[in-house]
Length: 398
Ligand code: PMP
Ligand code: GLU
Image (tube, rainbow, N blue to C red; front, top):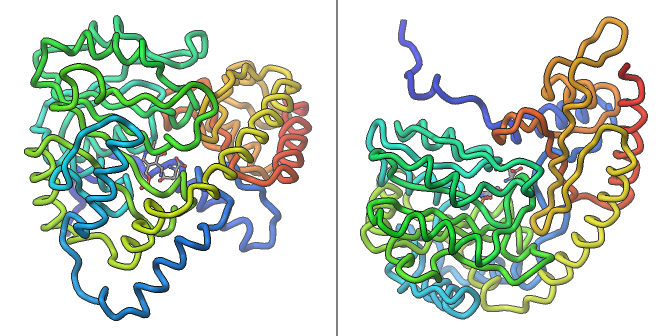
């Protein structure tokens, strides 16, 4: 009998998508569930962006295979965006448009990792980084920030984790799952410890750039000497409420951009022509809807912060960006009801799914088994109801 590869067996299913699927199944059975598991804007894609796609469908110019790395005008618009918004100089040839930032990151790991190469992953990290590194036969090395330092691993920790085998470092800022945002000084300190190791590629995932409530967004690629070794990842899913359109991109050193293009050319070809036209409209049109969404997220952040702080045993940090809270909930480990013991945060999330009918994601999937992630990309009404139900259910655990 044929068997599965060790490669696929080495990775777990995506916990975010698995939890979302569980919630969907319950809803299909008629059970009313509030889904706070998936990091997915609850807003609609702005009309002018939809318009770009509709025009493309009607024009008859966008039926054929698009260029593998993306349409030239879209790559030019991305190159200009990098320059204008981020102070990063990537030429259009250094841009690769992909099927979501997920594919962008997977391409980079496939392009640069050899078996045994190590990738430093600032932890808590977005769920798919470790799986993608394993699929590319690399080894993730987790460098952990905790709630005490706002979940931000330090430059000293990074320095200690560097070995002869280190090939890359990856982090997101604003961070999924913690909402933490690295300041310019913190990025400079990290860049400082990487300075003499030009063989280490920096992968800076900035997909939540536009959902940032604190200081100005900073890109590590702007720090002296870094642009030639930094892959900056971004995309349309979050800031433009376009998760289903699947458009992400990188700006990268030319050798990596070429390799990502080659990878994509063999695996998937270019990203959907219509989705790329929508993305072009997003970049060249009004940013007003994006700013309104960010304002709504900020308001919800305040609401959720207050509500979560009323729950006994929840230790909560104040996220500066993205749309997640990542409370430490270790207080509940070892508690239970008659016939049920909560041994892990995963058990806690399953209990809350059953009892409170709220879906959340265990922190284990993000490298911190004491925490859970709650996405507040949901209506204020749903957030209030969900957190009230969570509180009631938790009160049953003794
Ligand atoms: N990076 C981070 C930090 C994310 O949260 C996500 C979530 N989808 C992605 C990358 C991938 O985004 P997408 O594939 O939808 O562009
Ligand atoms: N990035 C989102 C999340 O973390 C979407 C799910 C995914 O792509 O894994 O929930």
